[in-house]
Length: 335
Image: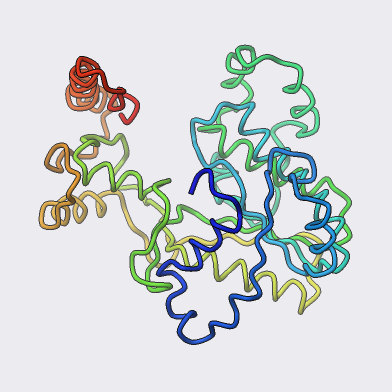
């Protein structure tokens, strides 16, 4: 949907299979959906004055889901989207005269280095305001060189900036309550709006798609560990429930809710390996470059050897042939 305006994007979404049941049962509800053009990287979210006036008079519940979820996002960009974007969103929310609650979507992995997690905001790894101000005047090369030390052991810029984004909210003086939702790894739906529905290749969906296409042949992980997957409708339902509960029961100014599956229905990496590959062989997709195969590795050395043999070498070979034909290379980037 890149390049489309807000109205076209919303119309495409409402016409999708996701809302098929609602179109048949309550079609009049679609009249309540009003598209608003915006940009999380702009002051005031880039919302026009007329739209801002309309929102200030009509919005009572706000859901903030916009973020970059790329693990390898450059730190400067991740800060702009996941921290400054939160600050810009709060500035807009303060102008909503009838706002009763803000729901902010974070991630369960913001405190992944801790052995035990509670639904609280732990001390920040650094001062979020100082970090945002400092990165404004540092060039991209310097920020890249400093990234590893700034992460302070955290695995990627995503968890780092999402965690500090929570502190941006906590440090603000807000006239409305906030609930923070921390889901684990969100995957396709279980039942609603339909089994297996997904509209993104981020996270586990991209991994499964890569395996089905024969691109991913190896994964470094410990198969006895839990991969905490949660179907998409569960965090969505929690967001709605938390909004209602916060307003109805006049909850404290800031509440945190974590949602995952490992406590009641754990899925191990060995389960994924056991079920995914046989299913793909029985149900192949049309765009397969190589029959699905490979394995999960607990040995990093074994994994790196297979990366070179089954990822890098085939990718460079295919890109060389593609370039010889005068076409744009793409396989090395995919691996």
